[in-house]
Image (cartoon, helix red, strand yellow):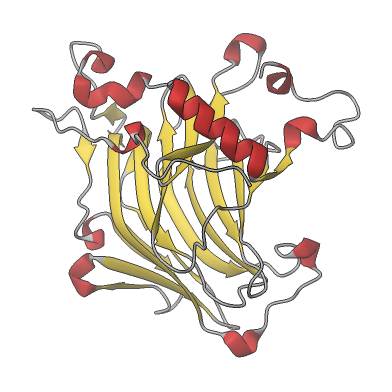
Length: 293
């Protein structure tokens, strides 16, 4: 296994407040202010004066929540601690999504596994209702032992998925070659814990062991350095281009050479599925964005 520096220059974790209302910085201390529990009949809880949110799953039901705000571009961070032990059959989903038949969506999904076997991070990007852009990864740590930060940087040029500041995937805006890119539809943040034992673990071969229920995933330290969309207006609207402000640097941010090296390290050592190399799935030819890497 390749070595990896213990000290990260985490560019994506820098959040700078600026005067005015150009940027919305969500409270990291009170999840009640940022999220609504939407389903689960009491299985989802916000605890410790809003510092902790937990989702639970049992045989009767899972649970979920969504953000109060909608966003059109942003840098979204959340710390998660995933379901420990035998989590086979369970899926913890954490994603951005718009509504409608031609929705946009940016997905993290965490596929549970038998005790001792690694979690799989499943990522996908939908634009105008079309997905099929899956990349899957193992992690270089146990995501159930402690909290780790899972981030989505979404600006008009690219989407970057990161874990503890390390980029694992970049999806670029390639509208110039006819690839739709999420840029016109505001999205809410959603998360849920649910049973998917028909497909989640080894293609559905391993079923959920309900004797281990309830299964619980935990969330804390949410931050959104983002453009809030409300009544058709963005909080990033300004007389000057937002990207000229240091506080809005994420709006034009790209991977520097160090981050590109880290991305290559993750993809070389931990990527286990890439739709761009699955020629059997695309017998008529790989999607056009796959030829641009």
